[in-house]
Image (cartoon, rainbow, N blue to C red; front, top):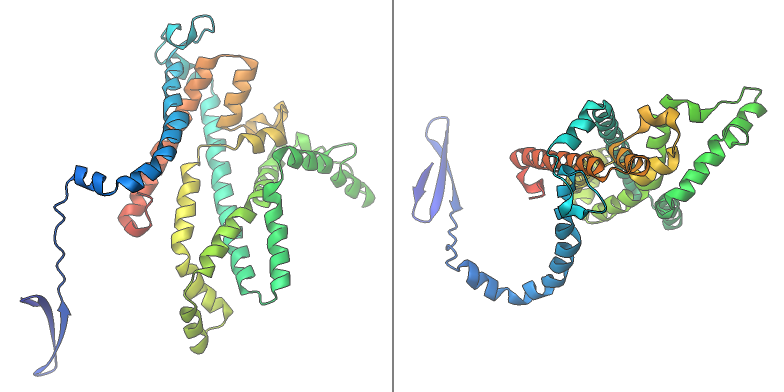
Length: 336
């Protein structure tokens, strides 16, 4: 390969004396000499439009972060945040020495991994199936049915779960008795709730992700699908080699956002379904429910703040590491 003027000539030889050359024009872009303040001045209209959102985020997201100081204090209501005595790392020591840290962290990670895998698979699957449907009435009906649970409150979902699994009058035991089988106390079966919680999470959350992937599939270049059909590709080949690769950026972005919350347990999901059932705590307690329950029962703000800070640091480190890996392997798909 040799460079000539403004072009790059790529040469190759076949056999004896047969030479092929391909000229690829070399583009040169002038370096921007505009300074930072000049760029700010040039974009002042856009920056002014952005200011209200920046102010709101600063007030409601960044100013409250000063409260992390509570994690290092023995908070007293009569002394306030800044007057309470400083205890250093004692609040963190209590959390780790209590034996609860490993259990709630493991539960949080495993549940969120299950949610990520199950929900993403169902979301992409439903989106692809609906996108391939020809009958618009059936398509819209199924889309609405799948999306509807997303708008149901977790309080209502917990009532539905209780009506199904109640030992005395639940629908499950009524069906078992009808079939001549004994009743089952589901609220005493800790192992069952790993699957029940994952199932309710998918039932309620899949609809939202499905709509996102449907929008992504709608943006796929139709010429690619037509070319695949002309080449004789069946529906499974089109999905595997055209549709899924085309929505790969959306899948990666949605997965990254979910991974960023992998240490954030859904308080509404777990607390509404489990409540204060101590028999299920070991199998279902996550960081969020642990913090909430500790604050309600003990009233120790400092210790609960320490657990919350521990959770925040884990979330931050996780998203930075995963985004760094994506940036090295697929730079175009990284969040930042």
